[in-house]
Length: 286
Length: 302
Image 1: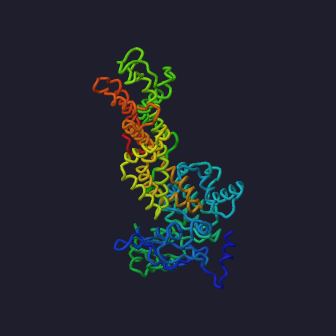
Image 2: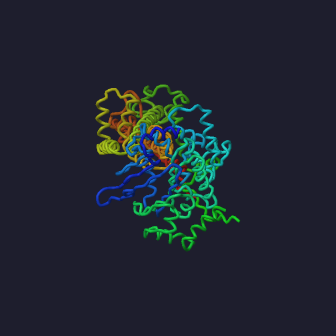
Image 3: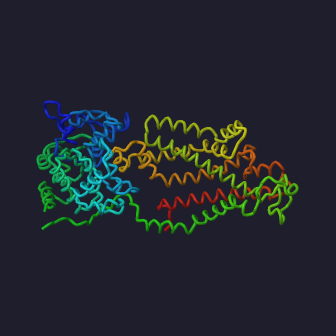
């Protein structure tokens, strides 16, 4: 399905990136009290690319994620998906199509699941973005496949309620939820920060697997430079709503140019020097 | 060797997830012992008295004359007679029934309107929220008793149902305001956004993702509305604007006042209805407070 979308959108000569963001801005409040949460941000994501957005809390990275997901309206600039402007799509029709290609994983898996409904129900509902109504059997097949892909046994989790699963399990169900519609882009907003350290690697590896298997692009929002280094191809450093530095991960993190990036690197806890980030990443890989 | 750091600084997931059914039952029974049970027993007794009483005591008609003006309590008329020589005990049963039905209707109507307007305003936001809240504030500003009196006068034949609806449509604004605040904060919760990403329509979002999280709140609002509906009915009836052709607790008080029961010392004409009104309102408030305790663990004393 996603391939047909690519074909439909790719009428131009030069292939446009999966997602392109031009001067994207979001301002909260007005006048003297206005807060520029996201301020004229520009970047692009190619299919199958993992881009990390790093920055301290309050730097606007979560707002940026919500904007990319179109859960929040922007106050300026535009988002192009396969070269098509999706900034003004409405919940009526266009947005649903957009969400077929762009899905999300949030920080707190327990808050992201409605405690009143079973896993099966939440997963079935997420198939609603699809164009046509699938027969029950196919729905179940897709859900089971997605669950297996994140390393869960469908028969074990489907009939459970969110509170009956562990943090690691529920976060993987959350990823499975995004997977059932087979998106081209996953916006992951701090997907590991609520998890135990030992579970983080599992989730990070899962994401790199997804990229490998589905050529899925991933926007990985994090405050942890080590994770950004471990998982991403490119890094965007956000500070006060602006992208102050962006580029290939090695270049940005090992040879930071901007003052803020240097400070972020210096603040990496417990570790001294840049090489330690590498060390941390290799620790995980083992 | 793997040097994976073990789960030492495990961050517990944010909001306390709902515990298992067993924990919930244990939690509810812990509260059941006290105020909840007490208020529930009083309420059930009042309900039985009002709805089954006439059958149990074989009193088919509340308005039949059985004695003279203000006969004092006796073996036949347990609570004496009223100004027209009718049995007060029988009237008390029918009056309780009428008051409860009106209160229930008023509570239902008020809660429905309040939740509807509040949820739409809170969830949709923008100009619609402004408009709906402007209307709500206008209705709040006009003293509801004035609207009630005007409406009651305008409608000549006021049945019990009419009374309930009239009271209901003047008392929803507070519920609407409270519900709006709740819906507004629920709107940006993660699970709602996830449902949006899953292509859910606004209506199904409100119904499946917002309302279940407000249910406890709505139940409590309903209980409060029910209690205030009964008191409002009493107020109107005492002014002579009660339901026509039936007995309610308020109407009993109106008769007692008009026919000088206080001055003549006929306490049985005004004490029982007053007592019952107080008892109903008290037990409903107690019930509301104890429901609050069940739903909101922070209010619970360990």
